[in-house]
Length: 215
Image (cartoon, rainbow, N blue to C red; front, side):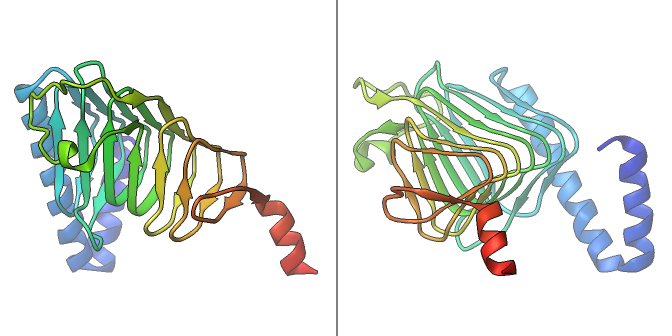
C-alpha cells in the first residue's frame, strides 16, 4: 500500500462515509504514534508505515519485533494485539497487510506470520512455560529457566479462527484455515488446508471441500 493508494482510499471514505473516514484517520494516527514511540523507546521494535490501530496494542520483552506495512489491530473479545518476547534472542516477524484482532503472541525463540494473515482471539506460543511464570514477565525481564522452545510459522493468507491456539514446533501453510477452537501442537498444516480439532490430528484440502460442496 503506497501513499497514492492511501490518499485515494481516504478520499473515497470521506465521500462514502464520513464516520468510517474518521475511524480510519484515528487508527492511522494511533499507528503513527506507536511507530514513533517504539522507534524512540527501543531499537528492537520496528513497525512499518502505515499501521492502523483500532484497539489496544502492546509489546513487552527484550526480544525483537518487526511488523511490516499495512497491518491493522482490531477490537475483539480480548485485547487487540499483545506481543511478549520471553528472551533477548526472541524474534517476532509479522508480514504485510495482516488483520489482527484478539491475538496474543508469546515468543521465546522465533514466531513468523506471513502476509495478509487474519486472526480472532488466538494464542501463538513457541515455548512450554508455566503460566504463572509467563504472567511475571516484565519489559526487560530475562527468564531464569531454560524452556523448550521451537520455531512457529504461519504462512501467507492464513485465517486463524476464534479461540485457536498454535504452539511451538508447528507450522500452518499458505491459504490455510484453522477452525474455531482448534489447537495445533507439534503439527504441520499443508497449504490450502482446513484443520479442525483439539488437538488437530489431520486436515482436509480446501479444494476438496469446494468440490464436495459444489457436487
